[in-house]
Image 1 (tube, rainbow, N blue to C red):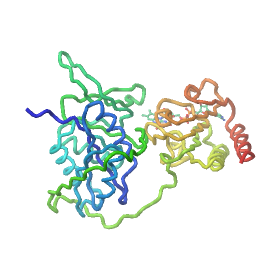
Image 2 (image 1 turned 90 degrees about the vertical axis):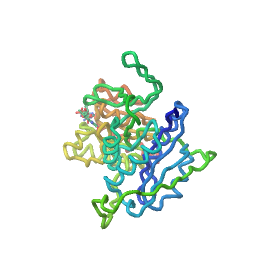
Image 3 (image 1 turned 60 degrees about the vertical axis):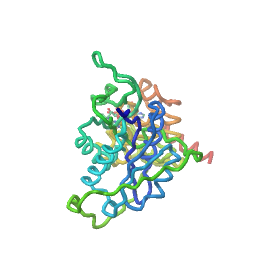
Image 4 (image 1 turned 180 degrees about the vertical axis):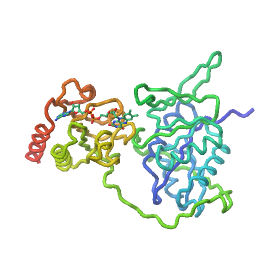
Length: 339
Ligand SMILES: Cc1cc2nc3c(=O)[nH]c(=O)nc-3n(C[C@H](O)[C@H](O)[C@H](O)COP(=O)(O)OP(=O)(O)OC[C@H]3O[C@@H](n4cnc5c(N)ncnc54)[C@H](O)[C@@H]3O)c2cc1C
């Protein structure tokens, strides 16, 4: 009997011909998992005209890309993408499949899981390989899917060893993106036909209107974030001014979004964006676990809070106890003087 593959597959997303950052991050994660499994990293991609971009994924450790190039797939469409992805997963039988927890990944992955009758764990914050014992049976080298549960109050490890493949979604910024390794060979792009009839395409995209995001937190190297302690207009304008002075962007906690002070695209945390900037300045943020889930990996954290017991201080590299208005005012003055 043939030994089942121990490969790790990544669902590749492309936007306007460019591979999405989340897909590269997932390839980095897949490489670490595949090493532990003695397997290889492969990918599945659907679209039109992506060939060269896919070959370059070799520098992230991807050995093969199963690629369906069809003009009808140039724009994302839930049903065709899910059906063709499920077909390729069935054909190549990887042990693990990873999707970005993006609009596209969150749409496709559950449909694929339903078609393949396998488990899917959404929004994982860590992925590991380990053994799992149920009664007398031990499943060796299975995927440990780690994510916050029950409102973030516990960290759960979820396994689905009895169905194949194990599938997980991961949000952008959660997995560490490894630097491209130019010594690795290019990925082999294996073109696959699209077997769908036209009537499987239930929608037709007539026009794509691009709207640039006002803020791109995952790419920001410096983030100045406002919590409820800095949600009033005066404090918020200081947060904005400090971010501008430092060449950074403005983030915030969820209650600041819920209160309508800033739009959702600024929200950092478990139900917002995960960031890994060089510097994160948390202003009037208590530091609950759901917020920390999105920023604890920042290289340097400065916390400003008037409560010396605020949990944010437990992860901050530098803590300043004081009123945000006073502290931020002095920081802006100091940085401007220095510049
Ligand atoms: C399922 C779920 C998902 C969630 N997802 C997220 C998420 O993605 N992101 C997120 O942020 N939260 C999330 N939350 C909410 C989270 O639990 C906290 O409620 C939230 O992070 C608290 O925001 P905050 O620190 O801004 O406000 P608060 O908890 O109200 O803290 C305000 C802080 O400001 C300080 N402060 C007040 N005034 C001043 C001042 N003048 N100067 C200095 N300091 C001052 C206070 O001491 C306090 O520490 C989630 C909750 C749940 C249940």
